[in-house]
Length: 132
Image 1 (cartoon, rainbow, N blue to C red):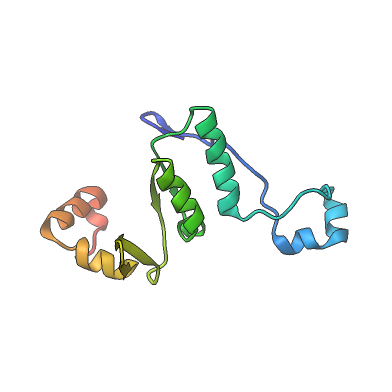
Image 2: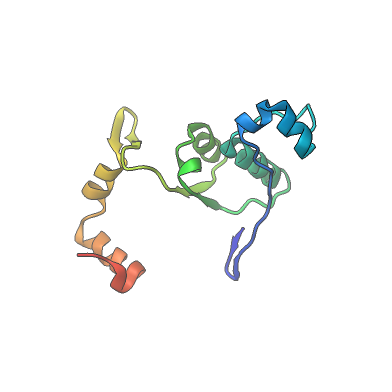
């Protein structure tokens, strides 16, 4: 959870790949109970977030890598619950900017994040690492 003092791990679930769960011998060796079913990483994240909402410990926003960014159900869950998010996506990911208006993520960045105002923001954020 992000705070002014830093961030912390607030929940964890064990991710078990679907092919490993399907392998009975491997399940037995690992001691995985029969009732454990496959859950995608984004589903596990949503389970954690649901618990945080119920416990009233949900921060105002979350961040995630591409695995979470490409999950439409997770993004919808966040939007439906008023939780801000920053998620990495592939360049070819199509973002919906407005109803009926979709654009590739790389085109969004090239079109909407290249104004002088945004360039100054990137320089402030990244300092010498920004490439001109």
